[in-house]
Length: 418
Image 1: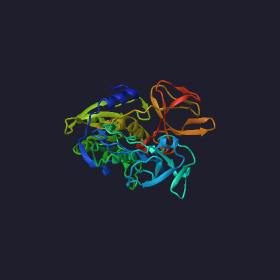
Image 2: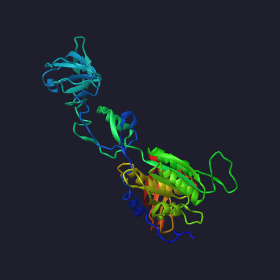
Image 3: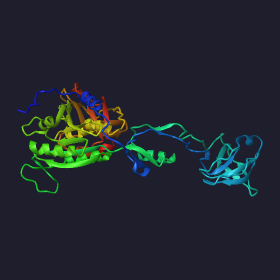
Image 4: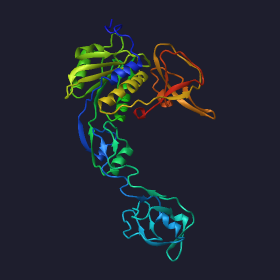
């Protein structure tokens, strides 16, 4: 019998999550990249604005700039010049005068309000009459209203989005210090697995997990290395681990962490390191394993192991809900847990007591509101349900019954699964 079959009770989902996040040191070094190569990378230093954005008051409309107090004394304003974006008006303000101004053009000293060109009448004598009275400072984008000098734009640990890149460009920043991608090795285990595109023998199935895991990890910017399918043989698995450990910081396997006679992953791991835990009270995905290797990173940290279940849905759920937050932290990212949405249930539902359940679900909208509807077919081998769902309905471990209309936690799928 497998020596791990009864050594450890199930760890709750919350305790497993906390254990992973409290045991995940930074495993990567830093590098400096040009802004054009920094999308989705994780900042290794905070960004402090050294200029204002905008860098001067400018017009938010095509129109006419003037001094608001002039409207108390003048019914017409004389046009004395024009300001374009990149080509400012260099004359001086004069009482009773205005300038034609284009969107983005700097507003000269003395002028404080802009009226849209559609709201004035221009005479042949180059005078304007205001058809509506604007508010003071209307259509003026103030210096520093977007970003003020000295403010912290981003903290270390921020993963840069496409719009973040634009904000950095607006500050004139050409390069940033970021963490190098976390190196993650992916292995599938099992004699029954075959590569897509090859003929199946009797009892064989195609390996879906390796491809799914690699796609999810790539979505998050990790440096993924594929170490293929390894047979149910401890010597072969040991050699695969040794090869992966020479090239990666974390190894993720799928299959081989249950209690069957052919599940050798935990046994080999205890030779190369130490298991921290391997059973979590969730469904799908109870046999999730986490451990340390004896091999060290350059900074002296133990390299990590995560063993996912072999069933495709279980593999995705445990990777997404348990492994990914820890991997993000190892990669230098600040991990923020988003609370689930609370939405009414579309139908009655029940389950057995003892494990938290992640139910693939969709959102149903009618004239009374938005509801969470569990998908039919929740088997741990039914990967197609992810394409039909929009998130997880999270069911509490100790509760067994829910009625239609009950408020339930709903976790929308994020960029990892898209």
